[in-house]
Length: 362
Image (cartoon, rainbow, N blue to C red; front, side, top):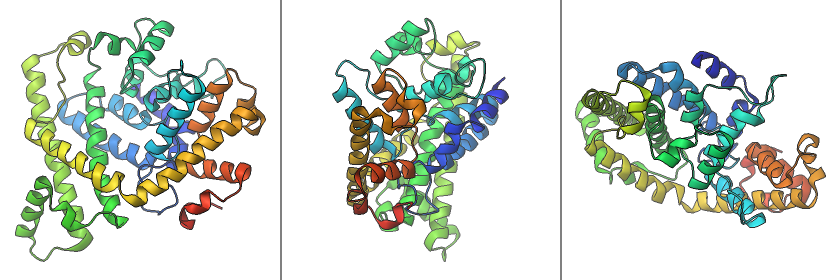
C-alpha cells in the first residue's frame, strides 16, 4: 500500500515541480544548490535508513518524506509568507495559507490524474504524516470535512505515527546539513564562522586530528558528514530507548505517548544552536533578504493581478470558484521561474531585474 502511495507521489505533477522551487537560494542562482526536490530526496534517504534501524515502515517514511513539501510555494518561505499575507488581507476570516495544509490539499484534491476521483488517493497514514504542522483553525476545518481524520490529532494534542515523527526529525537534520553546504558554496558562510559552533568545532578538530592536511571543500564535506552521522546515531539510540521504555504496541498507544522519535538532549541542544546560527547568518543574510524582498513583491503583485483579472490565469483556474482559493492554488503550484515569467508578462521586468541576472530564466 505505501509503495503504491510512493509511486503515485513520484509520478505526480506537483513532485516534478519541486525541481524548480527554492530551498534557500532561488532557482537558477546556481546549478548545484538544493531545490525542494533534492531536499525531499535527502529527507527520504535519511528517513529510510533510520527507519530500517528502528524497524519502522521504510515505505511509509519514504512517501511522507517525498510528499511533505508538495504544497510549498515558489521562492521558499518568503513566497509562503507573502501568499499568506495576501490571503489574509483579501479575506480576514480566511484560514490563511499553510504549506503543510496545502501539501495535504495537493494529494487530496489538486492532483487530477484519475478519472474516478480527485487527488492521489493516498493512505491515511501517509496523509497524516504529510500534515506535519496545522493551526487550530485549519484543524477545525479539516475535522468538519473529515470527522476523526487527519486533523483530529491537532485538536486532541495526540501524536502521529512513529514514521511521521521520524520524518519530522529527518527533515530538520537534512536541511541543517545541506544548508551549511549551500551557504558556504554561495559565499555567505565561511569556515571560520562555523567554528563558532561548538558542535562543528568538535567534529572539525576530530577530522584534523586524523587528517592534518585536510582543507577546503573536502574538509567541510567530511565535517558535515560526521556531524550528520553523529546526529543519526544519537537519534537511533535515543529513540530505541524511548520506544523500548514506553513499549507502545499499537497506533493508539503511540498517539497518547510523549514524542518517541527524537534525539538525545545534548544533540537536540546542538541542533537547536545550529538552527539559530543558520537563521541569523544565512537566512537573514543581506543578500538573501534582498532577494526575498523582491520575490515577496512578485507574489503580492501576481495575487492582486489575478484578483482583478482572473482570465490572466490558466483557463482551468480562471473558471474555478471561489476565486481567492483558485488564485491561492495557482500561485502555490508555480515554480520559481514560472512565477518570474508571469510577473514579467504582466508587469514588465523592472522589478525582477533587481535580481541577479543568473536568476532569471529568460
